Amino acid sequence: MAVIKSLMIKVFVWAVFNIIAGTLFGTYKNYEGLWWQNALTYATTGLLPMLLFIGGVITSVMLFIAIWKISVAVINVKGHRFMTISAQSLATLFLCYYAINLNYIIAVFIVRSVFGFDPYAGSG
Image 1 (cartoon, rainbow, N blue to C red):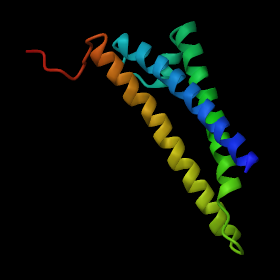
Image 2 (tube, helix red, strand yellow; image 1 turned 90 degrees about the vertical axis):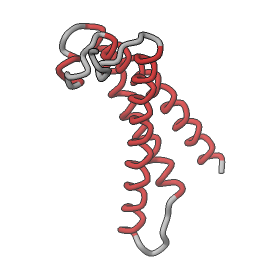
Image 3 (cartoon, rainbow, N blue to C red; image 1 turned 120 degrees about the vertical axis):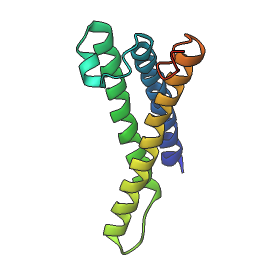
């Protein structure tokens, strides 16, 4: 139980770092009006975008590893190795997708509400 508790703390910490890093990257990118550019193209435009992008990628990878470790500790289908690995993989991908998607939602909310920038609003 102590192992699962420590793994849950790691997942929580990396999720918080991932949300902060992703929100900073998305907010800064979208504030500059670069909604149409993909992340890799934008990251090569300067030092700050590159650092924000690298921070987002590192925290995403660490979050993925932390979620994988906790799914390995929690999910076990006795006698069915393939089912166990499949369930662990699906749970990990599902949770990482929603954590990373949360970054985008928060960044868009900040850009639209705080900065008043909405590229999809009508011009007239």
